[in-house]
Every structure is written in structure tokens, then in C-alpha cells.
Image (cartoon, rainbow, N blue to C red):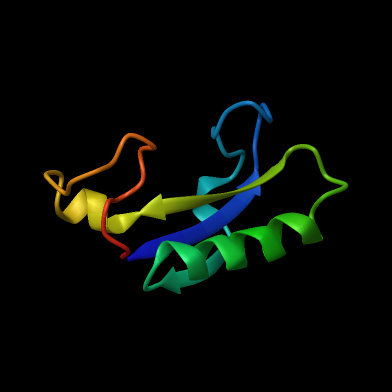
Length: 79
């Protein structure tokens, strides 16, 4: 389970959002591939705004911290 959201950040190298109470939520997605597709679409729509960032939150990792990972840092099983 993955959450995609974004907003204006104070520093493009970080994720300190300027207005965390009003972050646009793109949606919840059942797997990384669909979340990545949504993230890319939202990010490309804001390509000219350097201080606007979208992120993917791996909710399944928060719910199950012992979830196995491979060396790339991604889940070893598709979620």
C-alpha cells in the first residue's frame, strides 16, 4: 500500500513542506508500480516549479516494519 502526496518545500533537497496542513494527496495505490506512475504524472505537471515535490510513502513498511527487503531497498515481494 502506497501513498502519493506533495506540496511546496522549503528546500528542494529536503521534504520540509511549507504548508503541511494543505498537502495535495494524489492517492493510495495497491503497489509500487501504480504509485510510481501517479508520482511521475504529478511530478511532471510541476516540472517548472523547483520547490514543488511529490513523494511516495510505503505504508506497508509502516504497518509491517519487519517486511523483507532486497539490496536495492525495495520490497522483495511486490506490494
